[in-house]
Image 1 (tube, rainbow, N blue to C red):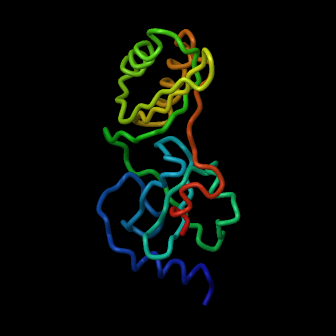
Image 2 (spheres, one colour):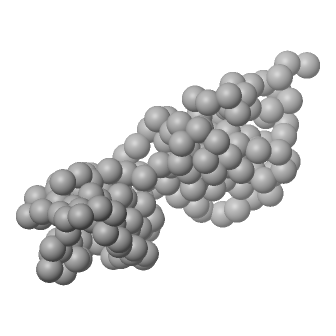
Length: 176
């Protein structure tokens, strides 16, 4: 028996979960969840990874964990986004700014104008005149995320906007 057929049997034994945001190709509804290490959103290319006893962990193809030493190609499985609805997805961002009065107000205004909600927000002065802001925002898809990042980047005093992704070994439980 090949590793691929064993993998298909293992996936087939995973309990059905109903209509979620992603589907395992050729397997019907199986337990699949979006990996926290890369927080994929609709519009991004996906890869599924069969975990040991926890279903299929779904990653963005450019997730560092997919390429690191924890990844076993034998456990990869094709996944795709299900039909889209009004679901929102949490995406962590890191924003480097100049540190001056009104910066947080301008950032939250820019986020609100793009119809995005803030789920978590943390700000600190990291060096004289500089601030670092970690925020988890809700977006509908990759286009919404791109618009939001542009809007944040256009705020006066914003120096950099990056998507926070766990590095090698970060959120490794998604590959266990």
